[in-house]
Image (cartoon, rainbow, N blue to C red):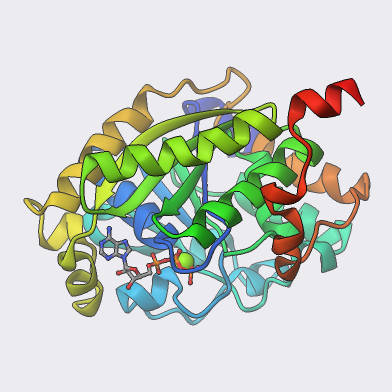
Length: 307
Ligand SMILES: Nc1ncnc2c1ncn2[C@@H]1O[C@H](COP(=O)(O)OP(=O)(O)OP(=O)(O)O)[C@@H](O)[C@H]1O
Ligand SMILES: [Mg+2]
């Protein structure tokens, strides 16, 4: 079957980028458990680990990965060959040490990724991308290409500041204007809501974006216990507070609209990556520049308008 024919028999695919700016806020945990909860609900879910850092999804789950996207790009195997099975039937594209920063990829290599995704044999309802910390070109590209950007924030000043800095670049340079906020590791619903209000008070003043609080995930020791046992909390501790919150989030995810052009080929998702490459969008700031993005250094929106 040709790639186009495959796309026709597939339904629309929802593509969600999980990001957050700061490291260690729970991006991979939220991506993995939301994916597992959706999988448990009978959805066909693919989790794409786009973080080349240490705490990869495959490490968290103890998966044996011998081939990666680098091999696919070099034509040594097919994307279908590197897809791994995770808990609850979840499908996983492991992180690839062979995949360089998007900025370093040639147009041919990007075209190779597009082709690899369009040749996926799995029928997919939801593709969740776990991104790295920081504001790298790769993170921006995935967030820009996804239909929904889920920002993970925890109750630390640096997490709120880094989330703001990432949203600022995505809004100003990549026209992303809607962010779905997950308050992670909260000790009460009120803590999550207050964190959200803090973030909104800054974005409302300085950015033209809409923020939506989509989940407050409780701090739950079973999250770490599950990873120690090389699985996820949804699978091992289904009745724990975090699992209940992830299931509610998964239900919510399914209510988010899928654009009409999301025809299942996944090319719609990968193509903007190539476009952004060929348009040579100006280099994004480095992670170390986050301080320079501090809301305190900026003029409020209304003042900018009058300037
Ligand atoms: N709701 C939670 N309750 C308790 N522990 C949590 C929760 N969410 C995440 N953690 C723990 O926090 C640590 C960091 O989580 P995780 O690796 O998911 O963060 P990350 O944002 O993906 O990090 P990185 O930026 O390194 O990729 C892990 O040990 C994880 O088990
Ligand atoms: Mg991670």
